[in-house]
Image (cartoon, rainbow, N blue to C red; front, side, top):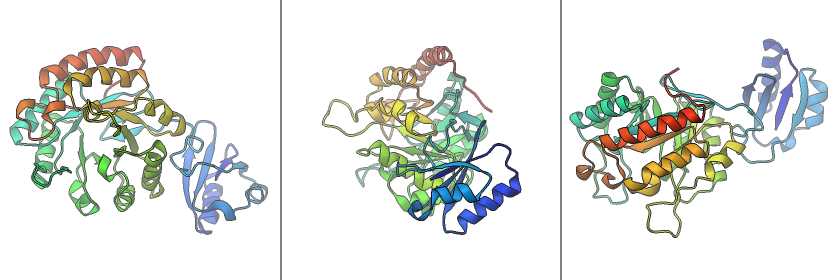
Length: 340
C-alpha cells in the first residue's frame, strides 16, 4: 500500500504521519521524487482502511494498494530510477559502469596487476573473490581473509572501489572496508543473510539464482530493502536451462522486464552466463543494447593458470579491446562512465 502526499508537506507533518503508521506495526519506506513524495507501507495491509486514512489525514492526496508481493522495490512506489553510490561510482539513471577483475584473488602480484590494467582500460570497480562458493568441496575456495586484505591493497593502489562476495552473515564484520557486498546466485534466497546485509548501510549486488524467477529475485531484493537498505543492484547472470553448450543461458529479456517492474539498477554478468570467453564480448554488447546499467566481467592476467573459472575469463589485452568497443556503444546510448 502506498500513500501519495500532497505537494509542500512539512517535515513535522510527514514525521507525524509516519509515526502514526508505524505505531500500528508497519514498516515504512519513503520515496521522494521530483513531483511527489510517497510513503510505502510494508506489512500485512489488509487491516488498513485506505479511504479512512486519506480522509483523516489532510496531507495525503490519495492511496493505492500495490498488488505485487514486492513493495519497496516496486516502480509504482518509486517511479524514478534509483542511483546507487558504490564508493563514489554511480550506477543507474544514465550512468553505466563496468566491474572487472579475477574470479578469485590468488596473490598480491595478480590482483594488483589486474586492478591497474582494468582501471587503465576503463573499468570503474574492481571485483575479486576472497570467499568462493564451489560445487566441489575439494576445489579452491579462495584466500578468505587474506584475499580481502589483498583486495583492499589493490583498492589503495588504484582507487577502484571493490566488489566481493559474502558467504554468510558471520563474515559481515570482515567487510567493513568493502564498497559493495555481493550476494551470489547460490545465496539469493538465504533470507537470514539478506536481512543482515539489509541492516548494513553498504550497497549490495544481488545476483539472480540459477533457477529463480524474476519475481523471486525481486522478493529477495525486498528482504534487503525492508530492513532499510535501498542501495541494491540487481544482476542477471544466466539461468540453468536444458541447454548444455553454455554454462548457463543468459536471459537478456530479464533486463527490460526488471526495468519495468523496479526502480533498482540492473547489470549483466556475461562471464558466468556463457562460461566461455569467446561469448563474453557479444553478450556484453547485447546487454548494453537491452538497457543494462552496467557489466561485470571476469578478467585475469593469465587465464590458462587461473585457479577458478579460467575458461570464461578474458586476458588483459582482450578486456582492453572489449572496453574500446564498449565505450563507443555506451556513448552512443547517451550514458556516462566514471565517478560521482
